[in-house]
Length: 395
Image 1 (cartoon, helix red, strand yellow):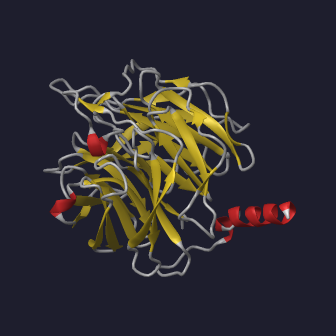
Image 2 (cartoon, one colour; image 1 turned 180 degrees about the vertical axis):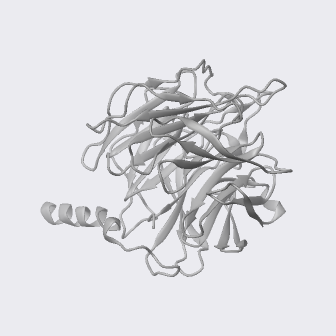
């Protein structure tokens, strides 16, 4: 029985790697995940995604076995929907789901079983992130490593080996943030806080973004890049870039290759950045988005050859050409959503976490996109605390 169960699990975990690129319509169960970030005990919320029209339904909660925590705005009040000041609180790759627990300083790892993806199973116990206020996480399938960005008083990057049998185990010690970074737990922001962490497409480097300050005398932010050596170890010594035109470095989304990415910056809009072979970053195409409120979150679709900048201050999404940075169009959705935050794209649909504690579903197209659903999360967790958005499977 144990042998059969193990084979069944192994087959399930390897299922997505053998799937072909999904068409617009398919009958495979698909799920969107977001995090309640509840200080009294967080939950992952799973939403079933329709294979035919992309809409979501069937909300299902699973405890993370960790606690949430919200950052503070400058006056000292809770930051609410922007409570982690960044992107990537939830990550899904292969059949693994990763979520941060900023109030417990831990990272939770779940297995997504294809026969029951609405109920991911916690693998082992949440792991100490070696720092304070973990707020963003990414996973490299080829390296079998997850790395998390801590943004509190003990700030830095911690990496973990990921194993189906043993769960998460620290790969080494914390990589502290230099460049004068200084924060509290919880941090006060958004200026001068951590933002995002992501592996590049080849998993040859790990990147993290840190905001500067767009005050009377603007100070640029920082982009950290840790190379991965031939032994598949993430370096402890980063390459640090601080282009003077990038101030509030927020989300970073690679555009299909290692040398180009979308970087959002609420001080002006979005930039297509160029990454050299030695991991130095330059501001290649600087795009000012007029009348934007807070252009903080980003996403990329190879299918539509478009980069998307999501504004938490207005109910619109600006579409950029990933090669030139030129504005291709704007997607509007309903005003009652109160702006957009973490975002994920699956096939022809975009899933946007909104300021009114909801999820707006956008049907994308070559000519832009249109709203097809506004799903309210009322009653599923604390209003205004939701963080992160990811869709399984990733094809």
